[in-house]
Image (cartoon, rainbow, N blue to C red; front, side, top):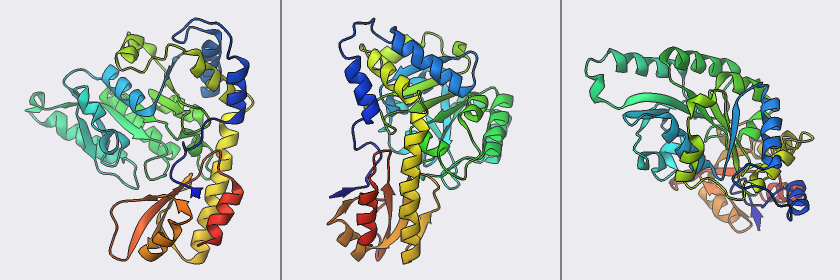
Amino acid sequence: MLHFDSDYMEGAHPAVMQRLLETNLEQSPGYGCDTHTKNAERLILNHCGLDSGKVYFLIGGTQTNATVIDGVLARHEGVLAAETAHINVHEAGAIEASGHKVITLPQHDGKIDANDVKRFLDNFFSDETHEHMVAPGMLYISHPTETGTLYSLDELKNLHEICTKAHIPLYMDGARLSYGLAASDTDVTLKDIAQTCDLFYIGGTKTGTLFGEALVVRQPEMLPHFTSLVKQHGALLAKGRLLGVQFETLFSDGLYLRIARHAIEMAMKLKRAFIEIGYKAYIDSPTNQQFFIIPNEKINELKNIATFELWGPIREKETPVRFVTSWATKECDVDSLISQL
């Protein structure tokens, strides 16, 4: 069976596993106070072009989103996000469970438009009754988005400018950040993200680690006592070295982007094949998530040889589907799938 469901079906990259094995019997302080974690933080800040800042290592994406948003927002505030945002659709109300509302905005190919943000903020603060409403306390975006699309540098700059003027932070969910940075037609670098986003996380779970996300905060004072909050949310790993070693490995020798580029190459090969055969793209994604509209009869055939996701409920004759490649996708598996199209 071929597997194209998601980009976290495998364990960890062999280099990460090897380094975990090599350091397995080391004895070190817990909770990220070890030398590997400190070195991983230094490497990440250097790749981000930041002379100062703070990196926190958490276990998973939903934990990271819930903990960051809870840490930034006051009790009367909510978070602005696209209606398709992961925190709004696929995190089981984790944000609301901490007492904060997700305030949705229209999505445009999965993205938020700066004009929609400005319009919402202007309308909110011009309403004389806004003290009785949930106040917008931050803006959440993801890059790539849930539909595999990417923000341009200009779009990020525009969002950053509006957030700065409104005195609310811009937070980026980077669960699949590597695949956005590795896309061939992006003009956004990690250093650009570090300059336009107040907080963002670098996803490891979907790019070569067994688990783990690295939260980058440009101004640590934005999250006072954050370690305590991380522990409250159950996201503080006692054996913190395990996170440090994994990210230390990813950010040495260019491994993080190198393995992401492989996923992009496999996704583009798959995309070209679908299009050449005549299938319509449901969303034009330049990243490792690819979406096509396929006749239901063909979907049932493909289910005999491959796993993938339906993108929404089954339609009458044809249905959008999603195929995802990863750092570990084998080209022979891509070729096998193509041969069955």
